[in-house]
Image (cartoon, rainbow, N blue to C red; front, side, top):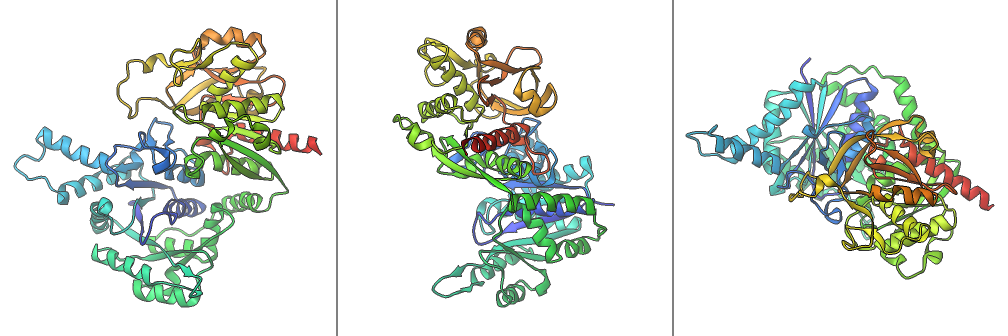
Length: 535
């Protein structure tokens, strides 16, 4: 059976949740045992998003194969419960780079290279390469940006041409604002978006409408009329308690059956998969207890910077039947000796990854507070490096301990640049990236949580624990809980007197609702236990 295509385009404005809609469609197709893969197009001319500031673009998501991709890939993996690969990410940088490379090789001899057909053909070629090598039942393409943007116009033309060769369903995600002064949902902006789509030669087969409240019949009728589709193909996507309920909300409207019918695919459901998903969603929506976790970070003004951390804690909450209440704490605010006032009352403290020296001393103060007050602690990447620095300073008595990232001439260089990074002069794709194996020590809490001594987690960093300090810190009670299989790099460290675990890896990147990250589950469970001890 030839691969079929679903293309999702957003109109009106960004931030409507195309990634969640795309992921929900992947989940719906899986409910019916159809193999579906996502492809994401991003119009920026960067090759990938690895060098982008998280304040501008949200977190950089890393795949097993070392690819640095858009954060929407995290949503795809969390819904589809599978690991994806970098060839599913198409950027403007990749497309233009490929066309220019071919022109330099002489592959277009005699031709003047143009957006159409050369760039659009290259986009179609990249899409069809996934079809040839993977042979999925369906490829779901999310077109980044908003219809009408110059940045994605050539890609919209490419998917229009793709539909001439392959069975393709187009879905328009739009928005119906409800102005308080009017008191009704307005569809005029969505109508403008339709016209832009039609001008691009694309007619939507379905319209999915975001809104605060459930889409009312009057607005639905108008959306259908101006999109030239029947009302039953206008799908409500109103605000819900959790993004994970969206596939079920779509099913309540029979969107799954309508989509399968248009695609000509079997509509025999896998009831066991559906029941398992419903059970997980119910635990997210209606947990038995709650716990308060503090995230001490340096990008807290934009929560998307820590999207995977946030979702991993949701998954861990579902696994422990608890609601995880997040307290976002800007690390710079902890540099004034006020940790007691800002952190008291928390059941657990987490320090995530990051780059640069802003707010570092505040993070260290937060870690010290957790250790001295036996508050459960989880450190991720930078959070592990600073846990080692804090321990060296305040337990081992090693004055002037730091990372060379922040103080090149520190007396005790507890964290230093990876040897493999010392000759690197390019920023893009040059860090220690992707999935790496680790061996956990037999006496570690980490091994108990994972249930095995050999694990694999994703990485994204340039600095590592300095092995010259292993013996000194171990003598003072720090547990070296995990290393690379060759023993050359420290990957996990732990406190012995209370729950304190940190890893150089990013376990949040592999956490899914149906397969939560073991470290996060253990951390939330320990925080619940600490909360209950206070009673």
